[in-house]
Image 1 (tube, rainbow, N blue to C red):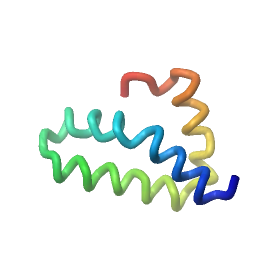
Image 2 (tube, helix red, strand yellow):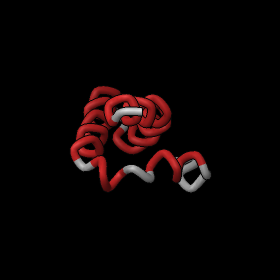
Image 3 (cartoon, helix red, strand yellow):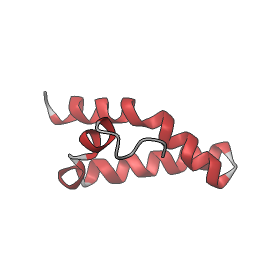
Length: 65
């Protein structure tokens, strides 16, 4: 799987819970959407450091966040 497809799978698997988590903090839908987008942009730019994100999520270390 190429980098773009792999990262797209990470986004799909994590965008909903991340949005809900951020929304619970900021209490504003537009701000939450913007922050989620910024998180994924930063993650993509630094993907080498974030390769373990999907593994951490799948093994439960990020459950409930």
